[in-house]
Image: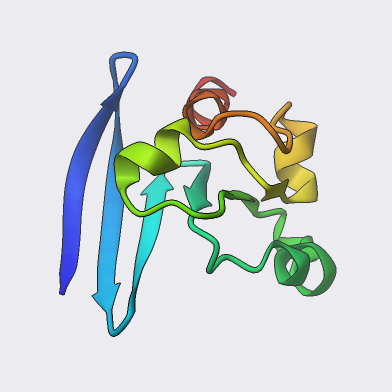
Length: 102
């Protein structure tokens, strides 16, 4: 099952996506410029093989809900996200705000 839901982050509306799969759930919170995602995101692939796309993305590990994804520290980020001031260790909510405000 796929669940799409609007999420309010400091007065801004972003999109939360939950994809329920056997034994796991994919979690994504997306803006017009980029997204944060659960551990299924392969940041290394984005940085090494898709770098020409300049994807703004970050990954948090061990999250089981969209709320946790917003509060969890980011484990890794793409090079383009770093250029926007997003960094590993930053809470997901702060990364989303940087994506909105950049």
